[in-house]
Length: 164
Image (cartoon, rainbow, N blue to C red; front, side):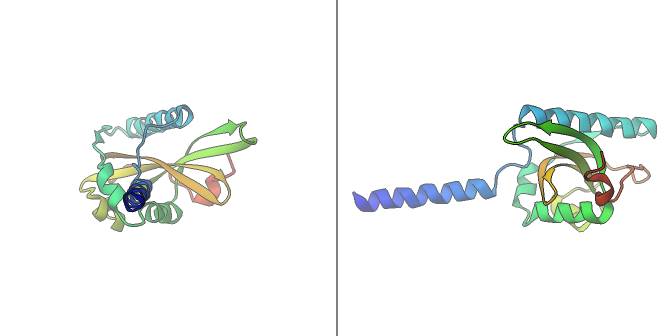
């Protein structure tokens, strides 16, 4: 009986480890994050409308993104390299008062990460959350038809964080 219990323990431990590594990029969002995601979508639409381009959401392949080695790290490196645009901020009261900032970065079809993401003719918009000066969290990934001439108004990360 001890051997079966031990085997079950290892099996469950392995499943938990696997699930934590392959947690979905676009999970059911908590209300505050969902509100910021909706605000980001409105900004994406506005950017397209003001530049007279069609806003065409495309299916994002979350399963593929979750299999990309160091996906979040690579996406963050692109945010640092190419810049981001501000989406919004929220005041959290619990567990301690703090300001949380939300911003979006892009993965364009010519970026190395785009090949892994199979973006072909699409741009990925990555919504980030930053609660401290040292940590950020990828919230969700959206995919749109890519318009090369579209100006996103990206600014260097250091100009966005802590300014709004």
